[in-house]
Amino acid sequence: MGVPKRRQGNSRTNMRRSAWMKMEAPTLTECPQCHELKQPHRACPTCGYYKGKAVIAIKENK
Image 1 (cartoon, rainbow, N blue to C red):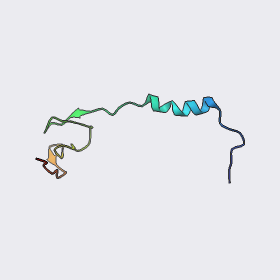
Image 2: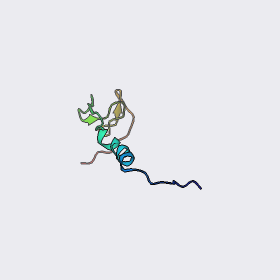
Image 3: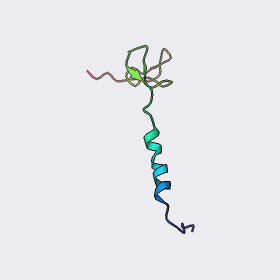
Image 4: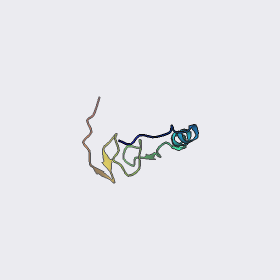
């Protein structure tokens, strides 16, 4: 089984961990049906519409 001969240096470890700092939050767009924020190219989690059609049945909690 492959085992490293030497320990990984701090610089290499920090470079790997720095990728988390570069990540951005996903962009949000307004749903044309209910005007809630949602991720683009996905069905709205609030109303269940995508491209003007109901694709997900959403339960009404009232």
